[in-house]
Length: 109
Image (tube, rainbow, N blue to C red):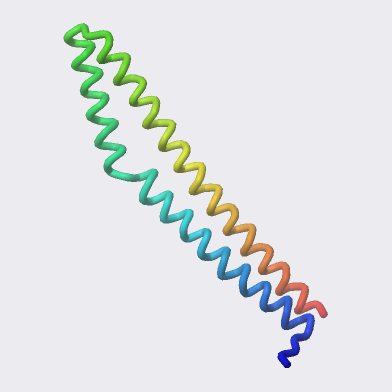
């Protein structure tokens, strides 16, 4: 039978938390780099701005209204993706901190 002491169990839990924290934090950074700083969103925003300016120049009010709502939607999309990424990074940091706290409890025994 496999026997484990309390220190071994705590060390195993700390190791799992460490790995989970690193993975979740890496996912958060990847989401931040790919979604928030994505080239497609920037290109779409630039084209929408040009379309709105053309609508203003040619006095097409419907085009301007639709373009401004599209720009607002793009801004909301960027904020949402940034919020998800920041949340994942913070969860990863909390898991890393919990892992460190567990290991520091073992050292004090």
